[in-house]
Length: 314
Ligand code: NAD
Ligand code: UDP
Image 1: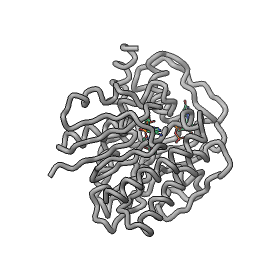
Image 2: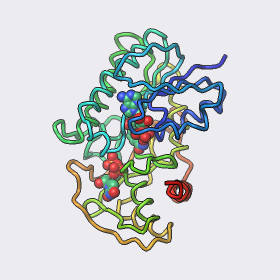
Image 3: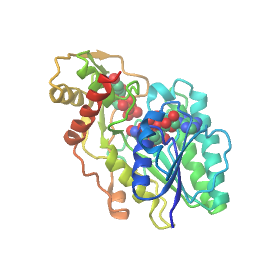
Image 4: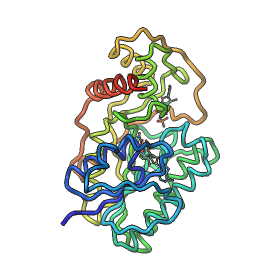
């Protein structure tokens, strides 16, 4: 039987790749998006498919849909976007999540929440394991997102305990790839665009802070594996590539890979910017048989190629 799968935030970067994979695997996909950071262009190639439906809707408002599974990805992910209207970011992560859990409860659908490594804040434990409770500033400029996502995790667990909802939590670490928006503002897309345009590469702080970057196809694979785990496995589970780099290393690598003449310029570090981040993926590897397969270099080649084309069409 064909599964009906709701993907919220399906017109965004990650969501559009997920919709594509789900349609390819013969599911019926309902993509819900308010187009805040996502675009129709990201899913244009799917709109003619009889197994794909695109609905413009904001998950902060209730919606009635009959589905078997829900991937809840709706939420701006880039700091500049989630900080643009922080109250809305909290509403998306609390009211929006309650609305999605409401569908899951009524329709007896599985629901997977796209959580984040940001629940660990600026971590003292390194690499981060799922058992670590994190160090989040509850009153800082990132807290609309960090605390919003922590509240969303809490709701996933309470609906599971109180209402037997089959909820699952995936903690996504920095993910990159084609279809990141040109104005997204996250580090990989910023640096590639700057390098291709011969502009200064804007490193925030001294560039010694670290991140671990996962290519989008690996992430989509991890999310789908997580959704399809037995009912009694619900996470939270870390999904990310444990290869850790400083931001300065990323800048230098991208300059080299694009053959760019760009110079690096240093700018103030935004408040509460985590100093280090690297996932421990033991649980993902043991419980869902998942490990990222695509190296940073291979992923960057594909992403650079994408932005080369995208910039031509501006
Ligand atoms: P994105 O900004 O490209 O996509 C988010 C999508 O959600 C966009 O299409 C946007 O228009 C939509 N959206 C936002 N608010 C909405 C609302 N209220 N109602 C309906 N649609 C709404 O970001 P992304 O990188 O694709 O991230 C997708 C999800 O994964 C997010 O929940 C994000 O928090 C999570 N995540 C991503 C990363 C990453 O590195 N990409 C890391 C951790 C977590
Ligand atoms: N960053 C940077 N220059 C940029 C964009 C980001 O140096 O143009 C830094 C940012 O300060 C952070 C890291 O890169 O330390 C990752 O930032 P991003 O916004 O991609 O993700 P997050 O901070 O949410 O992990």
